[in-house]
Amino acid sequence: MKKSTIASLVALAFSPSAFAAETAIQTDDVVVTASRVAQPRESVIADVTVIDREKIEQSGQSTIVDLLQQQSGIEVSSNGGLGKSASIRIRGANDNHTIILVDGLRVNSATLGTTSIQHIPLNQVEKIEILRGPSSSLYGSEGIGGTIQIFTRQSSGEPRFNISVGTGSYNTQDLSAGVSGRVSDTSFSLQAGYIRSDGFSATNKKDKNNYFSDDDGYKNKNISAKIAQHFGEKHEVGITLFHTDADDQYDSSFYDSGTNTLKFQDFNYRENQKLTAASIYSKNQFTSNWLSTLKVGVGIDSLKFYDPNATNTASVESSIKTKQNEYMWQNDITLPVGKLSLSAEKLEQEVSGTTDYSKKKRDINSLLAGWVANFDKHDVQANLRTDNNSQFGHHNTWYAGYGYQLADNWKATIGHGTAFNAPTFNQLYYPLDSSGSVGNPNLKAEESRNTEASIRFNNSDRDVKLTAYHNKVTNLIDWQFNNTTFLFSPVNIANATLKGLSLSDSEHLGNLTISANLDVQSARDEATDEFLSRRAQRHGQVGAYYKINKLSIGANVFAESQRDDSGFNNNKTAGYGILNLTAAYVLNSNWSVKANVNNILNKDYELAYGYNTAGTNAFVGVTYAPSK
Image (cartoon, rainbow, N blue to C red; front, side):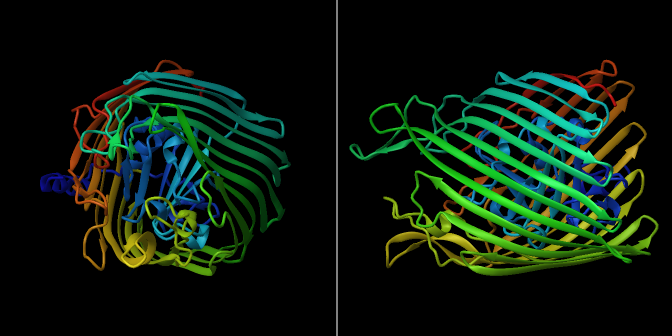
């Protein structure tokens, strides 16, 4: 990214007409993820973003990956187009340092340590909460960078149907339909969707080992459902379900031992991945100051690969599956000062499939306590959690934060917390293969200590936030070749320092909303003083959204500086900037149309070296959604 671009972003952010990528945060927003109890947005100490359904529609984005890329503190890497493997990094942390929850449940892979967020359709999303900074004291392992919680469609008011149909570039079609509401003491929501696209070639000629010029298509069938029975206003029992079934084509090759060469075939390598999150819960207000929530849930990531063999194009199947049973009992107790939260959790992880791990199960038993309070000009939060992992024992984490109201609309905050990331099944127990790769059962958990401070200005029209953070990560796990054993194994060899400034500003000027955010960061390996892979030193966005009568139009520019691509090569991805346009028109109280054109200047750029991104592309949709 050119220095002039950065200077423009900074100037706009401090001008009277700037605002944040996540658009203005209203004071009546309620946040759950930051403390596990409902809090007004203005009393939250941590760095949090709330993206509700209205903001999702305004963004003009059609995938959750593109939507998250616009948010401050978040970087995205993607191995191609729609539905291709995507990585989310918060504040320079690794992609497996982010906890991603769907309705409070984990759906990540215990073998990779990441969540296939690219398969979660935006048409199923009601709200997203982004918590930046250490979150292990709230949610356990992986919370070094932060937590993203996705809430699927909600129900309220009289029953209403909705349907949306859209089509776009690369022969993309998107269909979604649902019904939600409340009848007497029963509330319900049901939403189903289907997405398909011919796509484009995931790889380009830079990827000499995997490039094949065919189009790599994508299909996704998805559903979410919720039903709850209310017993008065104090007791509720319910069931939730989210499921997505995705088929994805990708480029690859195989090694032909007979000719000692890589070979490519006119065959669509493909994978099928299913994500499931289901729970049953009971929420009970036993007394005026005691709310009890009991939940039993399951999260499943099931992945199957279909590859050609070395002699023909017949499919050869391999698979890997993670199943996670979750049990949680949380008690929120209102005190004379603040609210105390006490919880007990159990997580049972099991992996299965064609890879023969030496150990396939582990249990994590957890106890946690939290306290939040708001009094006079002061906001306070404290959290303590202990996780007992059957593989490597206890791990304790904590967080302490304080906010002070300096003057009307002005607040300063400071916080410090610890976090950790447990080794994955691949890192611990991967069986020795023909390449000499093997897991290491003696690995320690990665650990971090994060300190951050912010100054904020907020009123009904403007929200400005400047946050500085310093995150020290130790025992980072990396794969290394052993010259004695001649094996390639993961070891705890690296320490890293992640530090930076994150600036966002939002403002409403009548019918006009203007936006900007900027992140300046340094994520370095302490031993080599080199930047960690796929982290830009600068990234940000500028946008505007104008509404007049029934017409709304918007535009944004996202820009990012150069990135080192991978620790296994010296390749770099160039800095870039892209321009997106969006428009919507309300036909009547029930019907609306929308259109967006992304990368309108047809910028040729990469989010991962050797992988393509979409050129200029458009999408048009029609929605039937009766107003409440």
